Image 1 (cartoon, helix red, strand yellow):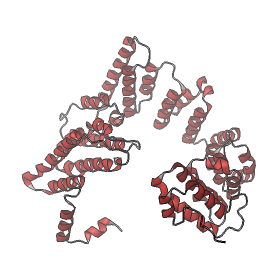
Image 2 (cartoon, one colour):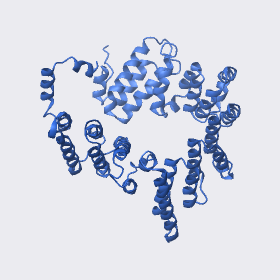
Image 3 (tube, one colour):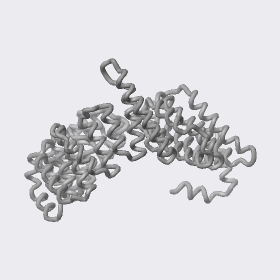
Length: 470
């Protein structure tokens, strides 16, 4: 059901009644309603929208509550709603006020990130979105009133207050706001600060001021797509860069099409100590240059030297029909040389050898339990329950065991679904081969987890074996 389509069917009276019923239940919803009502006001009353947003920003800044990981979703939704209303409601009325409101929103990032468990990074993403919104509105305001702000200084103020790393893009994405000359002057300022920090740093350890200035230079280089400036920002801070630093230089060269500079850095002898990182960058460069022949040759060699799911996946993408057929036929041999079960099984799935994948799942029951649950879910998506029921059973049992052994009660609903899947599959199995049959497995499950009554209730099954009478 589309809520928007259903709401369009209601007449004005019913809509008014619905909104009136919603108002007063939750504060966040009340604020959304108030902002939209203020946006719809006519004449001088339209200033009430800016006032409502200003008041809500102030309340947000003064709120001392802490939101744990379970409450963070609602916290994120509230932030997104407020940011969107500044853009969609206030911006059409008054871009200047919308710019100021978005700026105030951005300055709340420290308060927000100190007030919530942002383990999933969603709150940080809202402020990254706010950076993009501020830049877009700033471009609109500057096109109408060039001197409305000291734009360079404003960007610097954001950049210098980026302790949580959510304002990283503010200079990098500023090419539409600042002129080329302004960006060049900004790069010169960063370079001056960098040289000064390097010269005056008399203590050992991390040179924060130099690193900050170097990142600033790099951000300007990204805004200007300037390879020389990017390299300079790296080499001034670290005259002898390691492979991780060089990876960033090469990746930037690839992003802006500076392929000659990418090869220049990839030809450095230091890559001998980091072959995996080198091969990934080299292959990306060959792909961008359209050198399919050399790329395929390298990918084939990479797989043969280190057979695993990652190297096979890359080679499989460029292999022709004959090469894929050979890989399928040789896969039993390749899986034997795999370093881990998850690699062997994933390799079998990549080439479409589902019989081999099921055989590996049944043969290595203990190693299977150590695999990440996401792999089990991925393999289940590829297994046909009718053609490979035992492979499905092995995966479902691993998922079920994992939930119960860790006592993750919030996942008991999923565990109950796995249990029901096992009961359904059992009806079509006449030979469990080296797996325990259904009753033996369930008895062991009951013996180990009979106390987890909430799970058994969800599964619709007794938590203890039924007593038989003689």
